[in-house]
Amino acid sequence: MQFEVRPPSSASYASAKRITLTRLSRAVGKATDDTAREARNDMKTAMLNTGLGKLSRAIRYTSDKAKGRIPDINSNTNRWRAGATVFATNGSDRTEGALQSYTNSTTTIVPRRGRWLAIATDEIPKRVGRYRMTPELYVSSGLDRRIGELEFIPSKRPNEALLIARNVSVNGARGFGQARRIPRHGRTPGGRKRVDFVVAFILIRITRRAERFNPGAIFKGQFLKLPDRIKSNLIGSGQSGAVGGPIIASSGGSFTQGG
Image 1: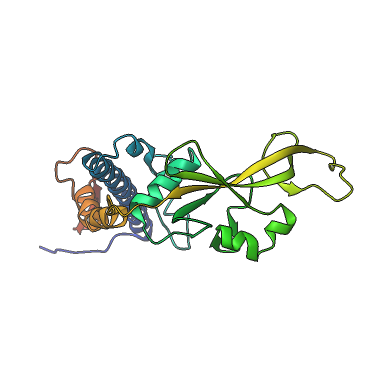
Image 2: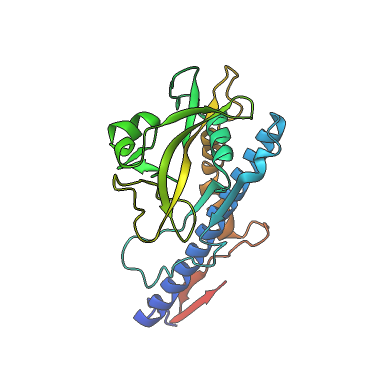
């Protein structure tokens, strides 16, 4: 009796490798989606428990899997990745300011009176280079000359105020945005609309209350579970949507692959 063990052919090996990598990419894609979704849920729960129920509606998540665009791992010869993120919807400047004030107590500016968190509106640039726009940066970058000097205006809302720039022009089609100072000759350039003023910053007064929740710590806690989620997806541990790995064996000249 003779017994012979032969390795699989090159074509069989290539096919098995392709199947393995495909299932691995699906497992990673599903795990990153699950991680972001659970982090979003934990953040919303933390906000609800600290009295920020309405604000929690702004917390969303997305992922490559949710968008149906996990890249083909077999056709990508460079670094392969599948991502997911938790974010706040770009609703209003007040929502952005409230989220910052409850999660980050270090971003403050001191205007003429009191302590405030300044949120740049869509009327002016959001950043100068890699720096987030602040009233101080607005002045130091020369925007006070190109757009207009900032004027402090109390708001009708408690703990809120405005910084406005008067006598400017805005995008004519939109009716707002890209504010610029009216030229000395007084004529408004083509495509521009003259307005009495624009709101450059919304100021939210910072109180001495403690930080309500820490989104970074919440996301890190879920991120640490990512390896186990990938493993569970690969071995098919009974979780919904698990992705089984291929079985490769050879004996007596045979080559078998299964899911």
